[in-house]
Length: 203
Ligand code: MG
Image (tube, rainbow, N blue to C red; front, side, top):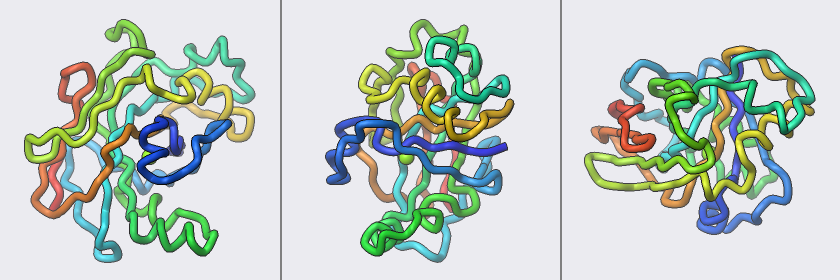
């Protein structure tokens, strides 16, 4: 399986990063070794001093497809969850300055913790989902899919022009504003529509 991540998909986050608001989706990938599941603890890596949380809604692809038409894209995922797109911000800055790829900053082992997935059918409208991130009980990020620059369907249609989607692939759909550092000892909890779907500790 592969993990596809959409960058700058919420305008306020693009602004806080002093990045341009993209005219078309921006994506990058993480390998399967980036996955961290089942509430397992995340061990703070040695190579960064500025590790940031990015809470994101994650789609689980339910059937294979290539060049998927946007109007059929909703048929290609049937479960959603929450994940953290962990980002070594200091390394990402260095890569950006040198015009280098971001894998060292974004795709390292366990950089993609995901929680429990729930059926899409349990949710009313996928374009009006509230989600939040709390760290040690304090609200850090709050988003609503209403503010997505590119909808889930548009993302699936766009990405599948370039990369074939397969069953079990995950798509991280972008983070809202409020990204910031984490540290050892933090308890990370993600809520989707007030339900806890993600819960793990940083060690
Ligand atoms: Mg992200």
